[in-house]
Amino acid sequence: MSDSSCTNLKYNKLKMYEKFDNQLKEIDEEYRTAIITFAMAKIMDMHKTEQNKVALYLFNCIN
Image 1 (cartoon, helix red, strand yellow):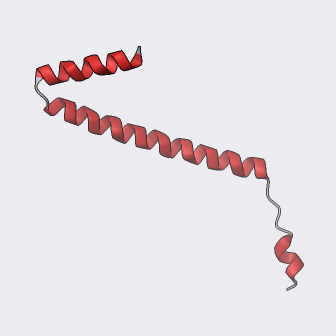
Image 2: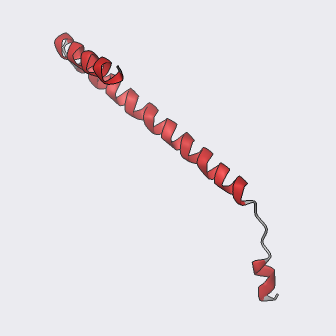
């Protein structure tokens, strides 16, 4: 086997970057879902006054 056979690998850079980008987006989505689930569980453990404060803070951050 010659060294040139190892350098003749063909790949599509655009497809490779696209696949990598899609994988990152999937990971990002899973991470956001986990964070939201954790936050919701924490909020459910709070007293009503604390829940209202968090809701108001989040509302103000969005607007």
